[in-house]
Length: 237
Image 1 (cartoon, rainbow, N blue to C red):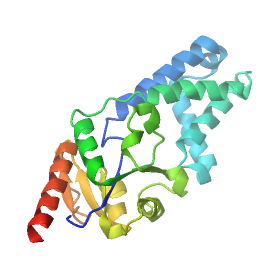
Image 2: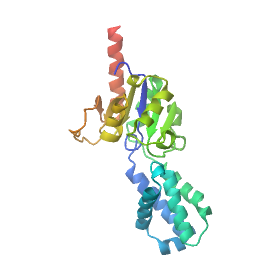
Image 3: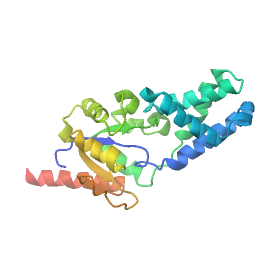
Image 4: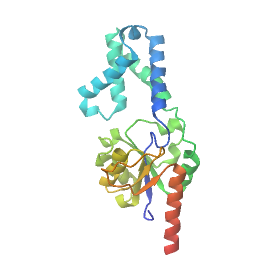
């Protein structure tokens, strides 16, 4: 850990809980559609919208990692099949997107993240489409790498390699931090990075995977881990 110069950081379920956010965003979008385009709920239900999204994944495999594209394709389909113009797609998506970025940080996140950003290069690495500018923490990150940017989602090596490239360091000098054992930890390790498991809920590590390089329960714990490594490096010089 004493060689770490950059941190690549997962977002959803690492800095905030994403499930409730997406549910609220979908409810906001559905309410907006019902109010402004009443023929849509006469034809479709919220469950139908979820089914359509999976259909879009099947039909547009080359865009399976682009959640924005898939959601807009669903909106386009329900608009046209309900007798409306596809012009509703962008304003409808804007309703969803605003709610999707109304996240609530875990209590430990902001002070610890600000402290880490003072000492390390931070790169956000996400399969999702969170807007860090809207969320209010973009200034803490040197860059953001999404699955769309890399052309592939985690755990593919391409997204981690792109993050390393943007950090301007070697892979061994990067610590990836995320909540998912396979997508985050195994993916990062296979790309040559160190990896720390953000285990907020006290889960047991899957035995079929190589162990993470470190395990923390909070961003505060991550800051303490990095501080300890820095202190150890200082005592060796």
